[in-house]
Length: 229
Length: 229
DNA sequence: CCAAAAGTGTTTATGATACACCCATGT
DNA sequence: ACATGGGTGTATCATAAACACTTTTGG
Image 1 (cartoon, rainbow over the protein chains, first blue to last red):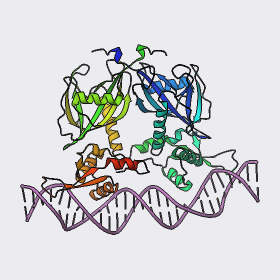
Image 2: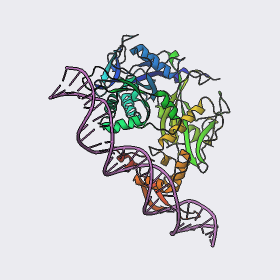
Image 3: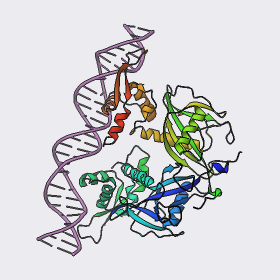
Image 4: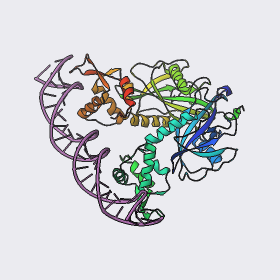
């Protein structure tokens, strides 16, 4: 079996676009780079892939190391390999798309002296490398996919009110939604389980708390059922 | 600027899933491998990416070299990097999805002694590496995307009849479509230009020939227009 | 009693589906 | 004249959109 020449090998990284949902709307997790190139710039969390791990595992490992986040929704986004995208030479990056619950929790800075911080998705600082383009693609994917896949629930607490869910969709899709139509559609999917409990400590009528029924969703997927919001 | 250790570099390939449309339906272009590993097996056309080219360029170059095809529709599909997917060691592959017109033309075997051949998409031989999985994903993508993007036209001759277009959609989606509804919907998009000419040499009433208006599609995309079939 | 969000139905418009016959052409 | 696919309209059903008021709770 012929070996592969070293000169034909690129460096391989993963970069993660991590979305969160907070009071101010859609947020995105960035780290401040502690190393050259782009030392001091903001960038997507990520790093070099190791030979003995898969791509998704590398993304999870880097996220855990750099931001302390784990157990999040993760899917591959796109692979960037234009020559010249990294000043260090030939570096190909597999970008991942991640959604994290309870974005209010402070991410901890970890292994290397990187600092992780949340930014409003529509007010990002300058980013290193081609990370702006990666973010643009990720936002586009989020906006498109949230309408035909139950991604929104990955950004909310395990139990949530219909009002919270509606505000989330309005924030991501970028426009107001009709309350009655929204509620009818969401409940009509038959994927929300009423916990029987209600919000506490709010200065108005307390709303019902719902849970997304992941199991039921998986079962319905096998048929010709279509999620659509 | 720190260099990147050689040990941390994978080999990088592109693999192309090339779809064509012929009398027998959806077809897929495979090459017979002339080299180990999997020498003699059928596999997706593809090969190693060079340091000075982009990923899509590499895919186009490999396709041209191995099959003589150029000027086709090409988009990135997914990146495969599981450890163990290639017996030669750490090989990451960026898979591309391609559509080619006039699949009736014989692909020529080219540079290396590979032979390219068309296979019915639903009767493929055993494939090398994880190429079966790559094909599965590509077919899934084709089926989904043909409904909300004008991909079908990339498989037909520049000028086609509505009957041909309908047979194409039926073949890809895998079920019969209502003729009147299909024609109404397609023409209702306002994206087909009537050439004024008709089929020739058919043993029945000659059908009108249409052309897909790519320019108009691009203009409409800027608004809130949605392609949907 | 006021502010703030929860909760609730009906009407209208739009798009999707089902369905059958005549037409034009080549052999 | 017959075989083959081309070409056409309407009625019905389902889904989406528009729209406003009452209820509950805490402060």
